Length: 193
Image (cartoon, rainbow, N blue to C red; front, side, top):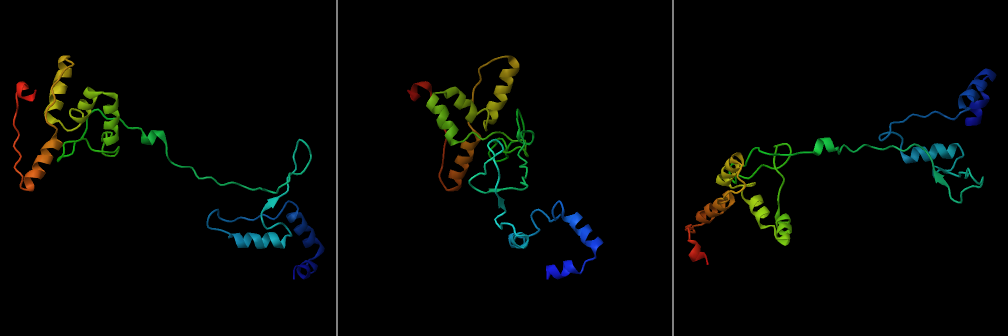
């Protein structure tokens, strides 16, 4: 069928076709929703080319052909939009959860960094008791301790007292909701020994 179509062309048309095909057949297809693998294999087969899409390349230094065929063509890459400028986040003061009084989480809520169970274990392993106390009280959900710490910084004092974390009060309320009467009592230093 192809030979018959070529024979039907005039001399000028044949020369124009040859001129157009001299540098290859231009084909345009959408990148991800265009020609399928079967379509491409069929066209390569019609052109008398290898359907694998690979070709034999020659080493430019030695002039010898490589022992295996190599895939050639355009590579399409998609950029991942994970940029530092979008991810960087810091917080000094900000919003707190109404129930637990802990800082909110995530950049969108201008929240704090979670100091989880394993991070607590790491500080315990280092024996950093005061850092751990600060992380779990003043920098988290100790409402009165936050105020005292702020006042101490304003005074230029580097010591402050911590109070009871709000998470403990939440635990007490949950136990009371289960019908358990939890009563907090202060003990003296002598009784603690």
